[in-house]
Image (tube, rainbow, N blue to C red; front, top):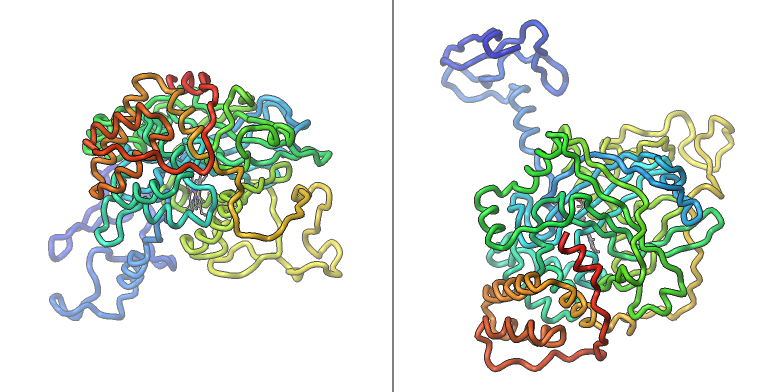
Length: 536
Ligand code: HEM
């Protein structure tokens, strides 16, 4: 029906009333009551006060008043799309996870890309880590790989996450900056948290100003486990490699883009998918055993470290194609709930203290954000395989168990509802733990500089210049001289040339002493693989 076909009436005040005719549905209230007039509230007389009796007006305003839900406490600004994952070969020897059993098996996915620090309305091309969260709707339940586009993280223990995020977000007394890393609180925290220095190098690299979501890598960051049908465990790190290659903008492009089009990244992904130019990533696994973990220079449970690809090559095991935009941004992108704790039989956690904390945090925050323990009833969060449980009631429950049985064990035989699956169900890997309970950081986590140097040296000359410029720009926005000097004191432990360049550009005098290092740094081989990836 075109505008011209529509029956239009003029109201007594000259207002437009579009009348339902032919196939055009009738406007109703939430209760399904047909609406006669959506332009005027019910009044006492034509110029009198609005009447409380007007149920249509009250329902409409009431609903509008409650449209907003809290934005995510981090990763508030994001963009989600649908697609599928296709498995290349059977991985039955490594994992019993159903999606990896059959070559060519396709599994539906929902992916949400995001910035971390910016609020929901902030600009896309901010210098920031990007979230890369993938929900795989497998036949044995939903598996979420809740990753980032950087393979390491700022902190080693989840207990520091609120401090990190408070320091990274806008300062509490002034409410700015909204989306940039350039401010005193952020660099104060970084400079007082030596474990964050490796990540600081990564975020000052071009990786944090990607050209688009399509040209980014994704990483699960933590070490996870894969468990096969015999119960054998293999450690694994997850990588998403973009078939488009890896591309970034440069800083002055980023600034212009943010001004000209704050929606640059979401528009890019929308346009690409609408045009049928579907972006693809390969899922790669770094697989290793206890023996490798024992002899590796760093602790595989430390999320501030990578395992170089020369030491453990990335094995491509499947591809992910993103080919469908959402029907409704709020229903899908805003209400999707990713959670590191969502794993399926055949996948398990490691003891990485950051991962262990995340496994508490996501469910907790989502109850607050989505307002009901029944957010798994929303289509974007619901499993796409059969599911049966005895959870009931709560706000907005519409999958309550049918019939008499809402508990087990019970005596109702076939009418008694679902039962356990001792073998096929999810069983945690029976890792042996015999250790004192203590609040401590492992000394195997103590080398904070060697990998930062390895990363810096793996960069090309131009990329190193970008890192030096980024540090200079960011620190030039820091007003407190001690904080600038403290950051440079860490850089002295990473690369003297980098530290001197930044200090000189900041006119920092005198040159600070290198920061105290908990342990001497070690000479690692430069990682040529890393720079090949970086150059696309
Ligand atoms: C959200 C990644 C560390 C708490 C997210 C999202 C991603 C992500 C991608 C956005 C999910 C979405 O698109 O809806 C990571 C990575 C981490 C990390 C890769 C470290 C390796 C942590 C830690 C905590 C945490 C340590 C807390 C202890 C949260 C919370 C949200 C979130 C509360 C908001 C979730 C929501 O409201 O739905 N994270 N995160 N994250 N993350 Fe993390």
